[in-house]
Length: 170
Image 1 (tube, rainbow, N blue to C red):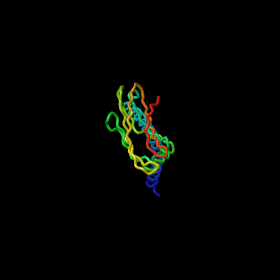
Image 2: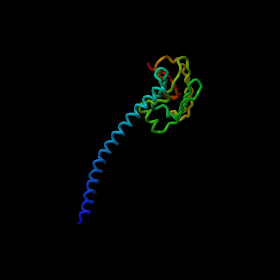
Image 3: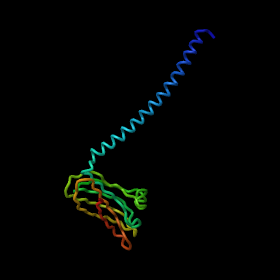
Image 4: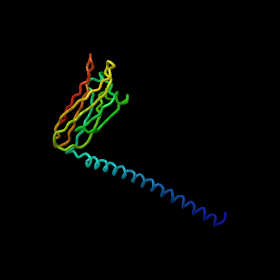
């Protein structure tokens, strides 16, 4: 092997070792940047939530089932002050989750302080295989601070007529 060839091979080895060392530091730099991006993303999400849904005007509506065998929920439509704000068609998996005691957040938004009307329209199949459609209205007063409203569906034997009740959480 000639001297220039040996020198070229030696230079190649130094470059390869140097690039491996810089690749290791590059990987650690990338990992650090990924962590920074994840942290900034979480901070941005929290900032968005506080700007879009300030606690002072926030209203959230949740759905639960009281009698888990009385109804197979098909859909729920939610209106706030006669404006549609939420609509949901249920899958078998979502129905099962509600029947196991799950709580679904139907709506989150902002409302000024004062009197408001919440209307829910639900369609379901009762345990006696009848198709039912019910409309329920709840008048409430939005006070300063976060407001949470629980909408509970119930249907008891023998007629399995759906009953919708509302409860404001403190």
